[in-house]
Amino acid sequence: MSRSLVWKRHPENPVFPAEPGTWRAAQTANPDLLRLGDTWYMYFRGQADGHDRIGVATISADRFDGINWDIRPEPIIDVGGPGTPDEVHALDPATVLVDGRVYLYYSAVSPTCSRSVCLATSDDGVRFEKHAGNPVMIGGGPEVVYRDGVFHLFYWKERAGTQGFELWTAHSDDGVQFEEWTGGAILSAGPEGAWDSRTVETPRIFREGDIYYMVYCGSDRFNDYPWDAGLAISRDLITWEKYGGNPIFSRGNEGVWDEGAIWFTTVEKVGDTYFMWYEGYGGGTARTEEYGTYLTQGRSQIGLATLQADCFYMEPT
Image 1 (cartoon, rainbow, N blue to C red):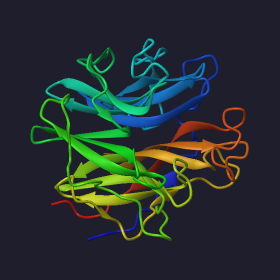
Image 2 (image 1 turned 180 degrees about the horizontal axis):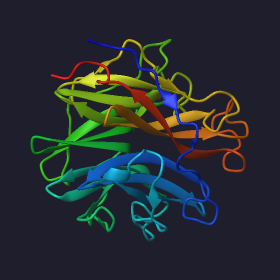
Image 3 (image 1 turned 90 degrees about the horizontal axis):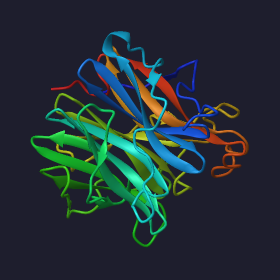
Image 4 (image 1 turned 30 degrees about the vertical axis):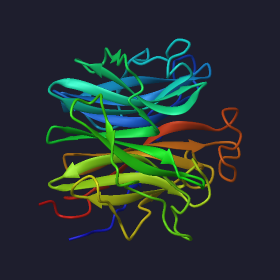
């Protein structure tokens, strides 16, 4: 059984606003959710002083409402020193809990590489150690799923001979040494005229029963400024089928905080509610221009939308 998906934006958006005088003074973005014990952890990017860093907010499970979080005052992953893969930016966190250890994959930016995927690990979800052999993959915007003893890493790469991105995957037994899937991209841009005909990016994946849902962002005109989010469905994490009713979520109306573009649509069901945190961009000329008046008037911040339903799209088996 399939159903329609009608999301309701939270009236207090953005729920993770940029805050002057902090490590997230200019922007907040790239949400990723993880439960560790009786606590929810929200990893996200903050920007200040021209650098992106990764921080975390927490809330106990008995206080969870999706909106109110305790944000740590300092980032948990800072930029690296000269010559490191993340000396300019550390962003796009994606986490998974395996045998009590948190594996956090993130996009790294340096003067010599525009995007690579790096790894940091932690035993408590807060104090992280970067992997000495970073990066673990060339690409950006990672997502990770652990299934049957295997790490499945998803990331975008530039489309060959054209513009925009497509989504690839790699597999690892230890979370460090990855082998890229040899079958090519696992999610490609749509055909001419489709809403995602130029690019697909920023996948976020969750599971119900034996069904994996990927909520991803796409565009028919920009490489990295998507107006919409779509849904793809898989049972094996390799073969993905796009939902025929895409897109399922779009940027906000003209004049609101997310009027420009959206990314990293992160879904989790808690109780009878599906929560979707996402990065939204708006302000200045963001409605009509790619990034518009970047940072002087426009900025990214994290918002929340919810869906009331017994199941997401299909009855799980």
